[in-house]
Length: 75
Image 1: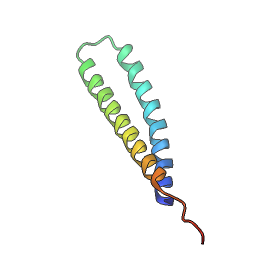
Image 2: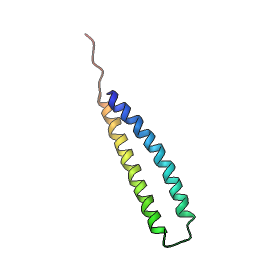
Image 3: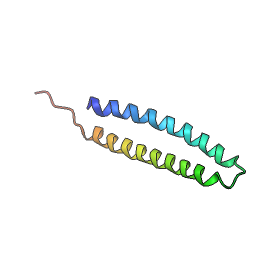
Image 4: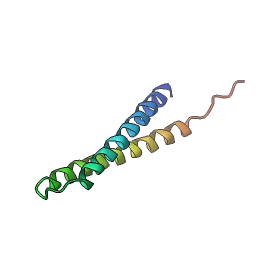
């Protein structure tokens, strides 16, 4: 179970970083005047969103694994 908790901590850090990067990318797209660069930035933003969603899914799966552990009863 300790490995699940460690992985969950790493995923939380990854989610925090992903949010920061997505906000930075969003501000770049919003402030861009060049239609030539916009598709590349939108591709970058969509890739960041996919990573964020993957991390959320993994976080949910690990939380379910942790919830499935039952304490061992002492006789």
